Image 1 (cartoon, rainbow, N blue to C red):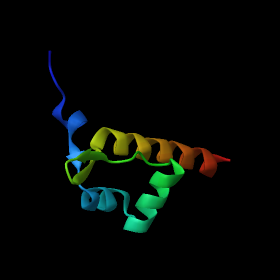
Image 2: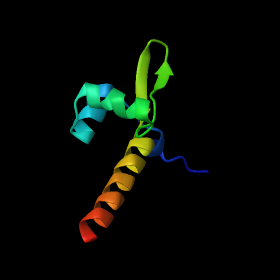
Image 3: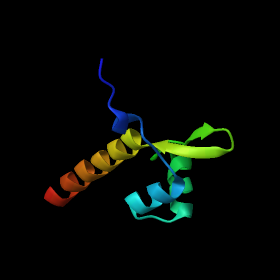
Image 4: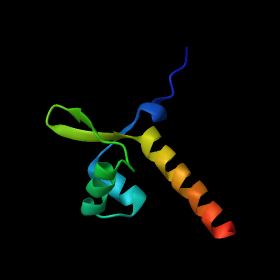
Length: 70
């Protein structure tokens, strides 16, 4: 059985902010609203799953394409 390590990669807050091009306040507001997944807690640290952030980006891009084509 092969494991896709990228599927299980965990991102820091700074990596998520850079990937999404947003500020910290927007990140936590979108988590509170349910738009973004909450981080995984590992001890005192928080990490986001790369696969979940990529899924969010894909959904955002597909919604954007629908709005632009209307």
